Amino acid sequence: MKTDDLDNFFIPEVSEEEAKWEKAKARELRNSQWWKNKRSSGRCHYCGESLPARELTMDHLVPIIRGGKSVKSNLVPACAECNAKKKYMLPIEWSEYMENLKK
Image (spheres, rainbow, N blue to C red):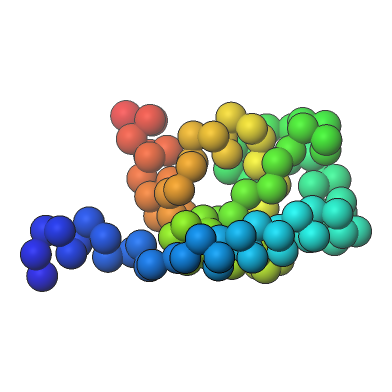
């Protein structure tokens, strides 16, 4: 496998139409009672910080652009800071990032 192939190993081709569909599903779930209950814990999935529920954002563990879907098992509450830092990272990439911060 060439280096170019390794750089794109985990990034499937996600069309703009597919991304729009997944974002629409996420918006729908954001208005659901399930999501309201999920974020009522008041804890960021990543850093564990306690925040008012209204300050938690919805984050895809596996980002849409990396092939993630807007399904309950792929959505977690996150503080704005963690969500912004995580961007398009996969869970394993985020874990490595957090470990490197501790060093």
